[in-house]
Image (cartoon, rainbow, N blue to C red):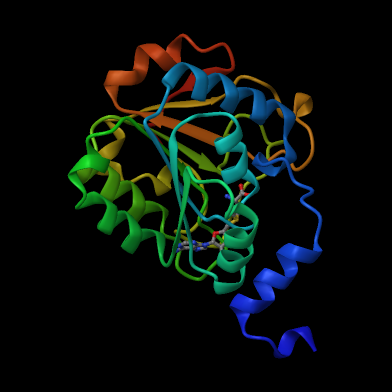
Length: 228
Ligand SMILES: C[S@@+](CC[C@H](N)C(=O)[O-])C[C@H]1O[C@@H](n2cnc3c(N)ncnc32)[C@H](O)[C@@H]1O
């Protein structure tokens, strides 16, 4: 019966009926601590998340910062679910569509690109993996930013899990376009996977030189070379 409903309506029904279980960041406690330190130190003026899913991480950002949050979701079902869940939080703007088109659109907004931006790139799962195109767009249009990529390989700690969709679609350092690697500095979580909880998804944090000192000073990150 529920499957006969259009996706947007199913999303709303799902959001209304299902409890809000996740606290965001795949329910990982060490990751949450790391993100708390990062957000508090960086003080972003806007947070852009790609891949809203059920909006758990989006809601965490709203609970832990006073800044505007833009989140993009390409599935009608999840967009509708998140819209229902997050509709009472005015600092959140939900966009329905492909993350690359949304970033393209945002990049034409001079007010947005001028702001200190935290990107949380988490749009995976589909045939088309937008990550490299997302990074290209950010590098071409923003200068004041930090990028966090979820579900990423931590290459010296096999206990962290990550997404691998086959050749050219493995979330590892080779997916960061080579032309950008010498302009970016990379960091892994300082916590070992054995100290992480829940899904133990890996993550990488990228910054241009302007925020290198800030990230070097954080207690919950450690630098990693971007050369592959
Ligand atoms: C790993 S989940 C995101 C989890 C969410 N950020 C969180 O922390 O709870 C991936 C989401 O990305 C969405 N997605 C996949 N490809 C996308 C694209 N190109 N643009 C926007 N969303 C996309 C999927 O539909 C899915 O909801």
